[in-house]
Image (cartoon, rainbow, N blue to C red):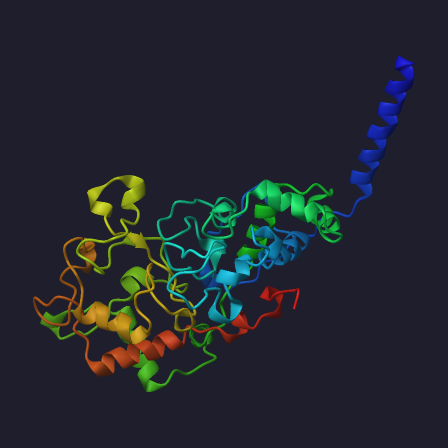
Length: 356
């Protein structure tokens, strides 16, 4: 009898081995982006990007079953038409409560290494857990989400295509969503076309571009907005955390809540400016409803108590506080910021809700 069970176990093991051998392997996903974006990308070795994984992740990104009330999805707070923000100062969770911070844009995450306004997550897989399980966001344990997906007709086969078998686990849910989010690449704005010599900016756009890139030197009569100090590089993003003078004493401590350092009071992640014209309201608390208000803040309304050192004394007036930009200069900077809008990104069908 023991020999029989040993033989049976051997047959069953061989069967599953053959299933794995002859099951179609997921196809590698080919990322496409400009050479000037650089190759300092982040893809975990245990979650390589595949076409099947991206397809599954896209379905899950828009899947309302992942929320406690079956009404919210990741896409509820990250709408493609708004460059994957939601147009609100604070988003509404399953319990009707507001989130504590503004919903960040999801763009060019392939190059990011820290996530959230306070940088508390070091990878997309880790980041995804927070909104999925937070009681004031989607509010559902991942084990419950996995159970819901197992009881559908479609998801077991999609997980098999992406991961090799039909097992639906919390880890695979976050891995698939992360694979999809890494494909959200925006690199086809007018600014990109200008860099490729395919677009000639207008005079006011060129003026704004020069102001954006230039640090003011009033002693030498050089005027600038110094935006590139924080938003430099072709991706208009550097992984920095700064206090940008919103308040002398911030209601939200920012990364100080993590580090415990007084010098980190009110410091937040500096977001990319890609598609910035589509992502109002602005700042971690959504206090500014327009780019005009943002420029007014940096120009005339900086609070200096905890202001990051490199912002202190940056002005177009000698010994001035704030940039002290003219009305025309503000209009020019905004004209350049509008060049960062990527219409193909917000209309790309590969990023849209597959259920519509």
